[in-house]
Amino acid sequence: MNASEAAVNASVPRGFNGSERCPRDARMAQLVFPAAYTALFLAGILLNSLALWVFLHIPSSSTFIVYLKNTLVADLLMALTLPFKILSDARLGPWQLRAFVCRFSAIVFYEAMYAAIILLGLIAFDRCLKILRPFGKFFVQKPAFARAVSALTWTFLVALSLPNVILTDREAMPATVRKCAALKGPRGLAWHQLVNDVSQAIFWTVLALMLLFYAVIARKVYESYRRSRSRDSRSQKKVEGKVFVVVAVFFVCFAPYHFARIPYTHSQTHGAAADCRLQDRLYLAKESTLFLAATNICMDPLIYIFLCRKFTDRLPCWKRRRPAVPGPENHSTQTDNMTLS
Image 1 (cartoon, rainbow, N blue to C red):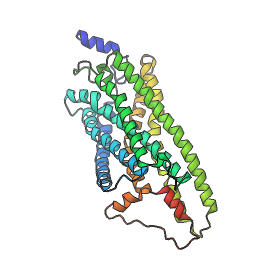
Image 2 (image 1 turned 90 degrees about the vertical axis):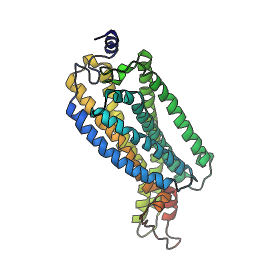
Image 3 (image 1 turned 60 degrees about the vertical axis):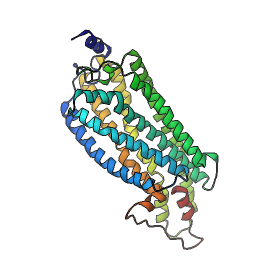
Image 4 (image 1 turned 180 degrees about the vertical axis):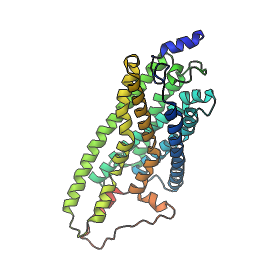
């Protein structure tokens, strides 16, 4: 071992995510997860390519459409980074590929993931306003505002992520690329920790706001249901329930990862004191929930289908069934306008 390798190894705690003291299960890391990500990549590319084709034919005439288009961009970025992760984890490429993953593609993946998280929060906010003020024209309900806040989101995340790229600056060698942290110096590790803290803050802030928004939405939906005089309110319930697909996607995809990340990060920073079996379980929990977070690229199209009428009207061979409006006694029309755009 030369001096540079010794310095790198000294900077990484023993037992830190795949170190020599606590080796990982190669079957899961090199076979199961790459196979699962391959299936996810193929499905994600197919669904998001179709969504891209549809959105290219839809003008950005509302805040909702603007947020959905930016969500599509985030999903496409996440999907395009997956082949590098698959080949790297399966050990099917040269060791230089692992260095590329550490320095670029993994950083882009996380940047896109947190863009998707923020955009889901903005979509929830937009749906809440649509229900509170279905015909309102506040400045936050104008497409120009949505474009500005989306641009600020991307600018903030790029500014947060770029130093991670720059500070992953140690010489890449076959022995050092096995752990991305080994490619970072002290400043790089400090910035990486800052990014982790900011990322957690983003998730928990969006989670709290989303719970608030959907508490308001649930109350309005319940009040609408009680006021309804329709003999058959089944179609109305269906329309009202669709608005909750956003919070369902958010919780299914992102909540498990951020819950699992807390004990996993603790085990990393206290690696020497943690039991190897515990570390392995936390690693598998983190990787499994990270895969669940990546499935967001296939779950977001559900939002497009359930909540965006313009999207489904453009889908090839999609026959949309609209509820009939027989007369003034039907009260589901306003709810339909509130939840579908």
